[in-house]
Image (tube, rainbow, N blue to C red; front, top):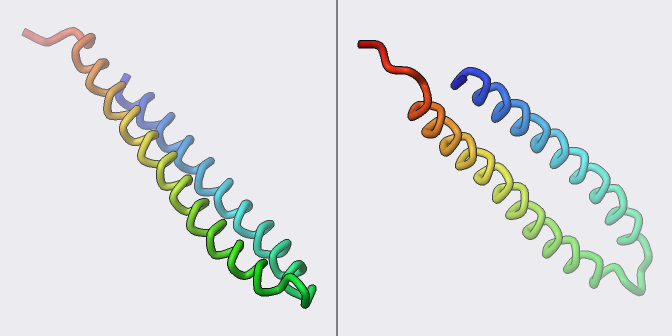
Length: 85
């Protein structure tokens, strides 16, 4: 059971890392284009900084939740597994 839980945790982690990478690539491209518009370039730079900080924290929160959920599931599995005498 613990191996299964570890596989699920690893799969979720991999998905989160991939999604975060794609998110950053897309947002970088969008912010780069918006930054070319002179009247809003300064505001775009400020917004990008806030966006990047927020997104970084969000994905870190999801990774931590995944770890904690897996730890909880492993603890439950340990209680349910039959003990050898």
